[in-house]
Amino acid sequence: MKSSINSRTNYIERVLELYLGLAPTPDRVSRLDRRLAENFYHERIELEQIEAAMILVSVRRLLRHPGTHDLGPIRSLHYFVPVIEEVQHMQISPDYISYLRGKLEQVKWLK
Image 1 (cartoon, rainbow, N blue to C red):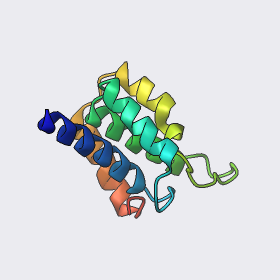
Image 2 (image 1 turned 30 degrees about the vertical axis):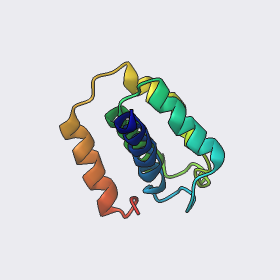
Image 3 (image 1 turned 90 degrees about the horizontal axis):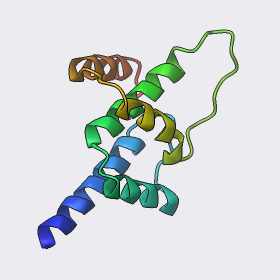
């Protein structure tokens, strides 16, 4: 039983770590963010899907048309829910996600 508690805790902490690792996010999580990460665990959403969604959101925000207004910082993990749902219905190559992650690192989008 203890190992399932550890895996649950590790999962939640990893989701929150991924979230806080993005440049336009807060320095700490809220209780609502933590609760949503717990919901992701109970819904059995794969960490790879969550990370892919966060990377896609970040790239989309970065590559917006230059003439559009600036977006404010991301204030909640809930911001990623629609893209997590989108990613669950697509097949994204892990190599493509690695490529995008590298691009984000180049522009210092990742903390």
